[in-house]
Image (cartoon, rainbow, N blue to C red; front, top):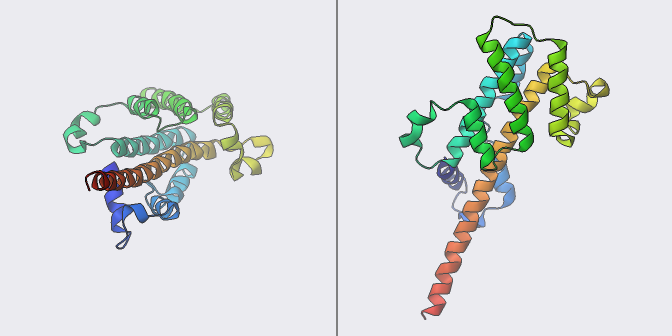
Length: 208
């Protein structure tokens, strides 16, 4: 997937080389590569009961993690069947281990995964105020200023953001990290192109 991102970006350069691409062009391209529709997810969460909103957020988080994992793997087709059997938590841990997922997202999504499993395997569909409060407190502690700087947090009374808004932000934060990884991939590819050209020039000079 990383190679595909670079190839797709190069197609947008209209004759320019990867070395000539600016940071602004890379960022603009990456912002077109979102893996889900924010507005649709917001509407889906708002129209769901609390327990199903947890499942909706979990499904979207799993989708983002799979996209992120695809970005980091080279032999996608050969490993598709095996990757399909990996749990969400294992995929998340793998991405976290490679530094593509932040400690805050790893911790918060682990907690979300645990709560999702409770609703997926038990006939209990009540999301208590205590659970909501625990998730909010956990997220504030983990995301810290990243959450506090969001307008949703600032506009809420005493930082008491809505439960479904919290779920939305957890998925958005993960998506931001995936997009940041995409940008890093493009910049690394540009650096490799610079190095390749520098090596070719050095070889030319040394052998002249």
